[in-house]
Amino acid sequence: MEVSEFNETGLFNNAAGFESRFSFGVFSGARTSSVFLEQVSNANFAGILCVFLVATWGRLSVAIRTTMVATILLILLSNNTRTSSALAVVTMMGYFIFPHLSRWFTLLIAPVLVLLAFLVVGDNVEHTDDLIGRLGITTEALRKLDIPTIFGANAMKARHLMDTGFGYVTASSSIFGLIAIWLFFSLGQRATDTASKRCAWATAVYLFANMMIGGTAIFSMKVAAPLWMLVGYMAATAPKPQTSRPNGSAPRGTVAA
Image (cartoon, rainbow, N blue to C red; front, side, top):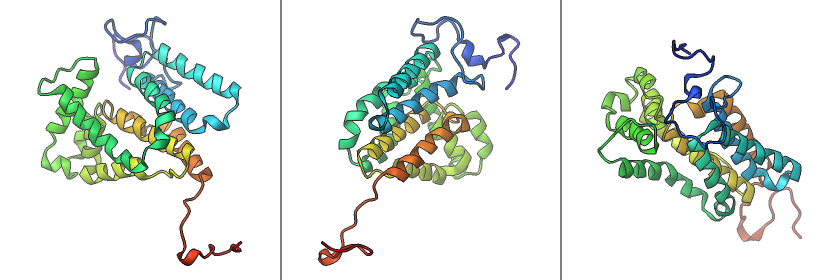
């Protein structure tokens, strides 16, 4: 990372914050950062802990639940993260809602978020440090994508699109890469019981919401590794879908009652 002449803290520049930056007003000073000195990873880690809690709540002891909730709250309040704070609320509400939704509806998350961004931002794009400003970066980038970039012939442009996930993925891996990631994030998880449905939905919401305001954070090993380890664990422990057999015959290897 380039060292700024105005930053002598040794922290990632954005961790130092600025006067008009969003804050809960609980802690003063720099925003808490990960061990890699980056505040974004810490905020996203709180989001992953929310996914973990929603997916495994019934398997955890009271002590672990209490510790996890306290850790999430501490990160949110000391990091002053808007996105992860909103996702924490949505994810916790989803604990009750996600099991009743079809897993196929996860395909709608990304297009609905992008459509809402265009409706909210409109044509007046201002690069301000608020929700409209951050969404405006994404809508502006998507509008400016040209044919070579869409089809992967201008990958170096991705360096300038790190604040917009959908634009970054399109530039770096073409529209076909974006479609592949959209399908994988939406349908690449097993969702055969209540816990795995919660995990699949919470993961998709976390990933696509972050792609609206950031291009590279969700792909960092600092947060991607524990998230996909959780997804793999849920897939390994979820019951396999039952397949019906003709004429009511018993599955191979079993004895009919």
